[in-house]
Length: 427
Image 1: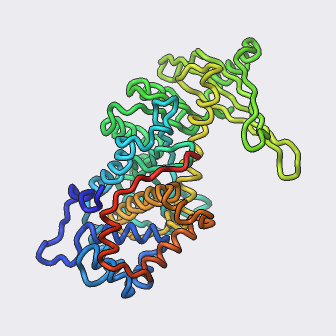
Image 2: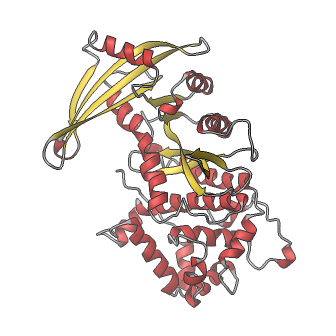
Image 3: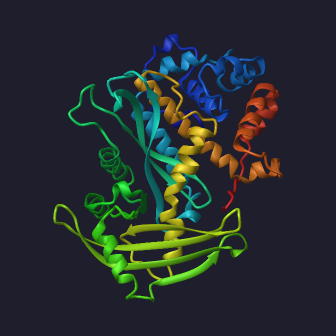
């Protein structure tokens, strides 16, 4: 999909007669900020305004300079976040529509959408009227959070599909916003935007309850939710009571490198659960005991446990656990952790303006999507058959290429006109 048309539905509020940089040009500069892992807006002035960078930017956008970071922030204050959010959603949607993600569907049908929240920016004083607050030992912290719906796959993709900002309506709300409230808003938006998309929600134990079960049933979604010993006591008790009575609901097998990972699955179907509103639900519980050799050679066992609306059998239990339940951790590992610790600077305040900060957040999601496609694509493997060592090394190479490589017009035109077929690492 060409770059400028992606932004055709994002209104530019500036006076057209006073514009030096087009909207796509400034958006591109913002995405490049994250692709090169610059870590701060001011780094644009130090690293992206050299002659070679300016020449390449001129070739792409017909301007004679590279925009300053403050120029980006000034425009981003005036953009509409919903319009930029739609661009992020459209990019992931295009991968679905073009069947790029078909091989990663659960049971060759459902896309696994992991929903989870994370903190983004923290302050020791109020940043804006929408700050969440937390007071401990007399000290108040002001912070912001987001709830992300990410499309996750077994090979490690974690693409932002939709974002819900967790924020208070004003400085002194009767009740603060929270992940659960944001979840219901996000789910409603997700259903409206993708009314026919086959979805399995992969969630943590915070969402284990009657309202989530009812919502998924109403929307036609499947779910797998982490079940801890503190969640739904009656369901846990019934699972333990019935497990020994149905020994056929058990599967043991070895997997992993050299088959040194031993997994034992147990499951119970048709567990009746009545929620606090007296609504009845029929659930299945799946438990996996996974034993691996530790670094010292001793065996270490980890327990995973989920509730789901899917009936579990010997034929689907492994895929359901591995490609359904355990996908939730990818929103943390391949998603939030990479964006926080991999150079993207998710927890850095790229702007203190409440609107501009959201725009930078969305551009970070776009950059992360593009970086994942590059990292797992066959073109990178062909160019660097021995790899680059880390994603940070890729960002460094990209930055140095942008700053130092001179492309003659004919070469650049040939690159932009070239049609390529990209294949992805199956994982």
